Length: 284
DNA sequence: CAAGACTCCTGACGGC
DNA sequence: TGCCGTCAGGAGTCTT
Image (cartoon, rainbow, N blue to C red; front, side, top):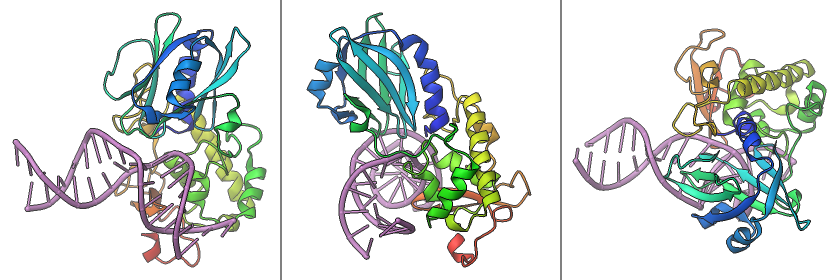
């Protein structure tokens, strides 16, 4: 599922072909995909708006738009689970949800098997984006910040790191990978993490995300593909995600899978010690 | 505030 | 072969 590295890859591949182009029209195949405004307003507003810059915030793809008449808007795309965004051809005719025409004759296409993805068009980004924590690859996020932030809360690490208002961009895969690298149990309470381990976790998050971006994301099923149609390569470097029942790549113990907050959670019982007060029963 | 359940969706997959 | 139940999960919402 697209997380920060996958969304970043989409932005990097699309930006050169999209920046400078002007939208000329739009078709909405599945109305609920449009988060804002209404479908009619979306279709009426988009034509004439030129893409000044394509960038990413958390897992949102954002296009800054400007019209000759001085209008300013921002187009947002959230891929959620199975959304795909690409430029140009008529590849993948199935599951198309929104088609946005460009002045060079190409189309910015959004497809989405499970229909969770959303496209928005707003005057101000704050009108659409929920509260978001810092970007994990920015200087705003480091071991010191994380140590304090963990201590200020009292929440299980896994759900906390998935919480976009705490830290932006992580999803199920990279949280499991980062906790494994930092040898922290997913159910451990955030306020019990020692300062040094918080620094390790922050470093793990940065290293893993950067590595995943270099590998153009992770593709372990048929869903995520880059805008150029290629699968990512980071799945080959997974340490725990999807590896339940197989040996831990660090210590050889069998990787466990439990449910945490309705999400499959993979970890090594030997490398990632159960926190005090959590018996075997509650750790799966 | 924390945590769990529920919802939105479809396709893949296991069992019979 | 086909039918049915289950599972997967990002994130918003609601309940405990």
